[in-house]
Image (cartoon, rainbow, N blue to C red; front, side, top):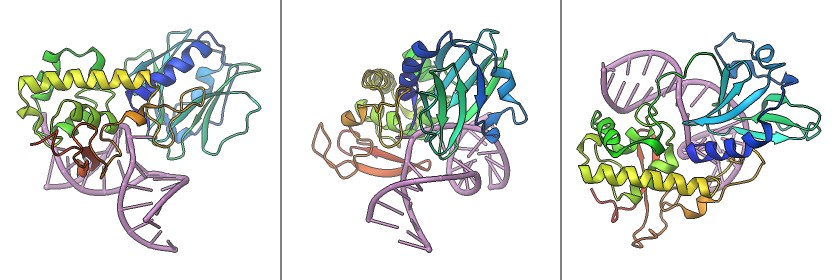
Length: 266
DNA sequence: GTCGATGTTATCAA
DNA sequence: TTTGATAACATCGA
């Protein structure tokens, strides 16, 4: 579900409501979703205040009054929502932060591919740069280092951090690049086009509140609308919105990949 | 009931 | 070192 635009939307809908809040209690902790493995997250959070909520790649980062931090990753099916304490408990609720009489933050994640990661005062492990802040030159240099298919390289979080299956396909279509092209074989013109396309698509998706294909909702429980604007993702066998050619679905690096054979010829 | 698919990523082996 | 395959999991639809 959640790639950079979805996570950004969750952060935006969450931050203003919970920044400055005191954490009264922590419950429903699913301990096998917590990293480090034996870390007891509840006492670390209880009695702290949330100073701010920010995004790094697909991670929702909470900074506490102690300057310690933790982040939540939503995996494929995670939802992080603001709820009233008396709201019915959804199945697969794996964390509840009690922020007072009227406010809770709840993590619901059926597949449990998400994670609750305590950082403390340490930094994030090494992941790639934010795609929205990346210069064409930096972008080209990172892509030149790998021979994998460009689609696969875009999904590698150490190359750029935050792009997932939807926005990789969408950006490649916009840049008119075939997803199987080796990353290191892209021309200067192509890497520049892809850099621009990636930023354009991500910014557009953020404006639309993200893509809701199935589970994704923002912190207020609302769906995104960007799926209405998808050029190729989840549109196999449908006509390309640019040229009317039929969109094709293939599997690349184990992930379904959608492209237009005419706009994105090899 | 079975099979294959789903927006992610850590881990392992070649 | 790099990269491809697999597993972690629940749910839905054919």
